[in-house]
Amino acid sequence: MTKKMILLVMILLVASPMLFAQSADVAAQTKAWASIGGGLAMAIASGLCGLGQGKAVSGATEAMARNPGAIGAIRIMLILGLALIESLALYTLVIVLIK
Amino acid sequence: MPETELWITKLFNDYLAGLGNSFLGLVGMHAEARPWANFITMQILVAAIIIILAAALRARLSFDRPGKLQHIFELIYEFVGGQAEDQMGHAGTKYVAYFATIFIFILIANLIGIIPGFESPTMNPSVPAGCAIATFLYYNMVGLRSNGPVKYSAHFAGPVWWLAPLMIPIEIVSHLARPLSLTIRLYANMFAGEKLTMVFISLTYFLIPAAFMGLHVFVALLQAYIFLLLTMIYVAGAMAQDH
Image 1 (cartoon, rainbow over the protein chains, first blue to last red):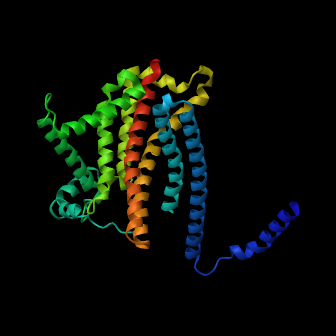
Image 2: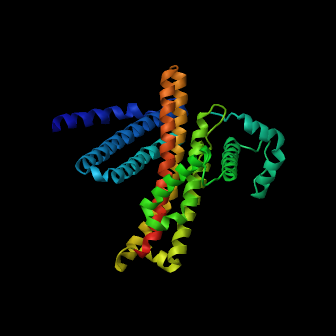
Image 3: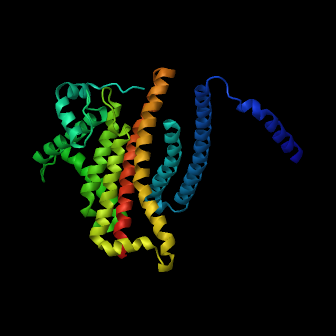
């Protein structure tokens, strides 16, 4: 495992001058990297947001199953929690859209 | 993507450009050729719709034989009043006026974008920012008025007094983050919903963009409700210093 990691780092080190060499139009390159970065950021944000919301919903449904009397209160908390978690992914979207 | 003018904005710009430029002059901005923006005229339209509905309701209020409009507004009032009572107990009925106003405004502003020919004013970042700043000022005012300025500022210090130098910056930052998060949540949801529908209309046809538009309607309703809920939670938190 560590040998593979060392090999990977070596390949990255050797290949990095080729990756970072600027071609003639700097603006188009920067835009390309910005798009890639934006897509990656949005993917990470949405993935983690999905995990968080999944945990929230699972907790809420389990609580509702255990205690059917509290369904109203749990429902309000669930909606609020989902919207707050969603807004974290939306902050990332706003940053991506600005750039 | 350049902003295309709606027909309302075109009307405003053609006939009332002088009025718009005088408003710009009031705040020190220089005059432009077509001063009215889409979101300003759409906001005025939403406000006009609400005022006309309320005026029509007031003319028809009746105790024995309520009409349809009265039923609808009673539903809205009970909904908002019930939520306020959940959050704040009996003291909540004083503030239902502001909550219902902001809920109905954001609801109609979100939903009016679905109709072709109109655009949601909440798609522009200024409009949610205005609502969020109004809410921020309102809950601080409620806290100051119900607890007095000394007691209200004292709650920033946290539960124990020797944690105060740590708690005060944290509390101030978290209080300042509230209007920011309210703004961005509402703006990003509406903006992303519209952009998503546009993208899918350009990609495929008929039923799939309609599904995303349906999602946008659901998100519009949900975001109005979330704004209401968070406003009530902030007001409840500002009020709750005595118990």
